[in-house]
Length: 459
Ligand code: PLP
Image 1: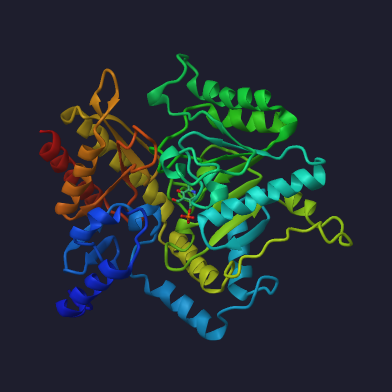
Image 2 (image 1 turned 90 degrees about the vertical axis):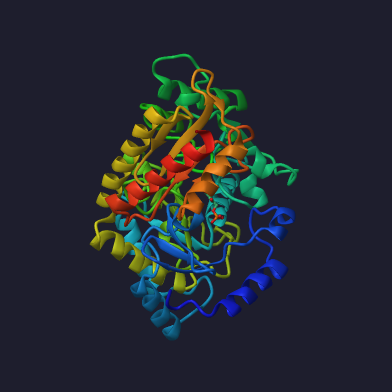
């Protein structure tokens, strides 16, 4: 395809990559003999590797990121023009795109009012943990310092955020961790922990049980993904969020929603929490904010929380003493502004709802043919199919075979994902999250490839 340089150049790129790049999440011993997939170009939902092979990307850049698709000239131009004018000036100085994006973002989030910029989802979450700890010191006399997180949720890769990893495989061997982070049970109804009718409420009540055990006056915040991503695409059951909100209000616990994956339309609303009528105190977002065209993340909060950090101008310890050198670097909000315009002007949220339903329907239909699929679930273009060796016992399918399904889709030119090295014993869910511009044909191509792959691997 045009634009890709000669194969000789690409051979050099592959050799340089093999020789010098330490890749994320890769066991490099196995990688030494494998051919690295160097992606060199993208347009719409399609990407091309260094050998010129074309793929339909059904995972938006691997990790739910490229919401508006590849090759968006208008975003590249917005960043280019901004960088020529003003690339960077530190923290306290404002920037034109920083101010305008914050205004546009807050208009989509009734009840919220302040945006704190950083560079990654992990950082955005860690900022909240620091704010919660500082509120504990300043407002609660040192109490309310604990932060609750949920089994199977993930909030980032730093030591602080790994202390809230509900995915044990991510956190193992990096401890010891800081104190004050306490786990609550997950809410996946397919794998019931309580035999009750109103499962959503029961799963939320389990959070209250932890609060009571720890002591309500020690608990400052609860962090949750609206729909759990890497932990297995867990859609909360009916009644869950309403009860969670009630519990947080009852015990004066700040509710932090991690929208790093769900935000910016992915789940079929601007933000996942808006599907459930939740009123959070903190919302964090990253991946889809600029669709991977620039590094940007946001910690968004209410005026009530913001006020706590400006009450006493004479006290040098009273404000949020935090800086992130590149947080709010102008390329991020410049890209984010244009990214948001595209989502609005191209009605991508409506498209996500429609295409998400189509995809869920196709996956549900595949259950009739493939007994290996135990459950399908999702919201918007954020979907999962859990593979089980036995539908009656729900024994998870062998994760090597699950990876083989991913590879068989890749061989057909469709990149899908799977929960991978996250929850021990449960790396068995195929994950789909195509860019929000997907058409009906794209969706059918994705689920068609899964159909063929399942037949090849499981018969
Ligand atoms: N929160 C969630 C829900 C995520 O899925 C991730 C990353 O996958 C993060 C936070 C961390 O984001 P980042 O990798 O940008 O630090």
